[in-house]
Structures are given as C-alpha cells and as structure tokens.
Length: 130
Image: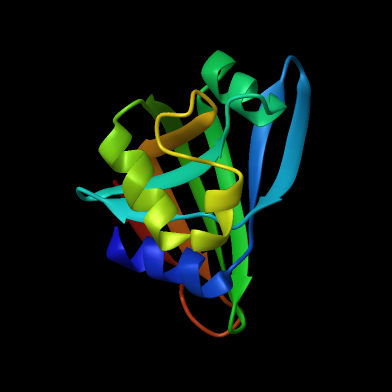
C-alpha cells in the first residue's frame, strides 16, 4: 500500500474514473492519504463524483511519474469517520478553506479489493493487490 501511496503522492495529480449510468467520467484529483493502512481519496458530497462512487463503487485511477505509470482498480468505500477526514485535510492545508471535518460536505473514501499495476517501457510490470 505504501508503494501505491508514494507513487500517487509523487505524481501530484492522478485521474479518477467513475461511471454515471453508462457513461465513464474521468477527472483530475490531487488528494491521496494513507490512514490506518488504507488508501484514501477526498471529495465534496455536493460533487457528482461523490454520487457516482456511491451508486457504483468501482473506480480506476491512473497517474504518471518519472517515466512510469500506475493504474489502480478498486472499490471506493465512504468512510464517515471524522478522524479520517481530519487526517486527510491535515495533509492538504490548502483545502481547509473549502472543507472542514464534519461539515456535512467533506467526504473521504478508502479503496479496497484493489489491484495496482506500475508499468514502464523499460521494466516488467509490478502488480500489487490490496
């Protein structure tokens, strides 16, 4: 899990894919956190991406860094724990003007039942399951 977290953190921006009915939706994200051994992402409850993950928890993440890329396939699980929200926002002070733990809008999702594959053109792929 640490390797996935470090890759996404170093990438700074990753792309999260969800489904809205039969239409894929992809958007850039920048929040990633490792809390209690789980990989977390953050969004606002009012955003369409939140509703999409609640309706269909299957997500994919893709990012590139230093000539390698990662693809993460997992299920996103809403965690309403205030401590998880606090941990995430402590790692991203710039978001604290828009989000507050327990404000009714801040949401964190952890990823489970996942597979991450790190690839490059020069090395064999590395697959991590969690």
